[in-house]
Length: 191
Image (cartoon, rainbow, N blue to C red; front, side, top):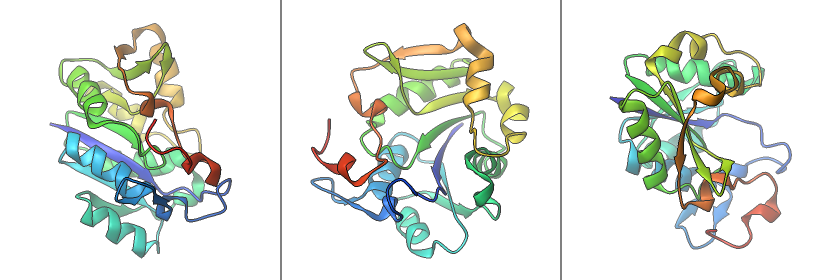
């Protein structure tokens, strides 16, 4: 079983706060909810990690189909939140880590990453027109490294450690490269 992990515990300081609650035109939900729905469509067992006290987001993500957990140390950064979520889904055979501010990633991209992990890839990532995107998948061999994450780096160091051995999945999905950092990023709808 491959688990989805949705990282939704950031502060969204560049956006000015509440980024994941921002409505996404034409998508029938907010940034975070659409990202969650797309992840759950590909991986029905998905865990969304949120900040403590973010009850509105937690409820919305739960309605979108994710198991929601609050990371008590989310302020320490993305790596801390990711380690917390992986620990909650520790029984999985692998994890596909998605970012809640990337609502345009197609479920087919996530399925392809999950399939590569299920087939034995230690690390797998989608590539669109030569650029590495998200979500990134990790096999069970990466569990100790994922659980050891702390601070704000996330899994970038794990991906770098695997270097040329990262399973490359070429996709026709520009959404795997597109995120929401600022309000202007919401313009233009699906890429």
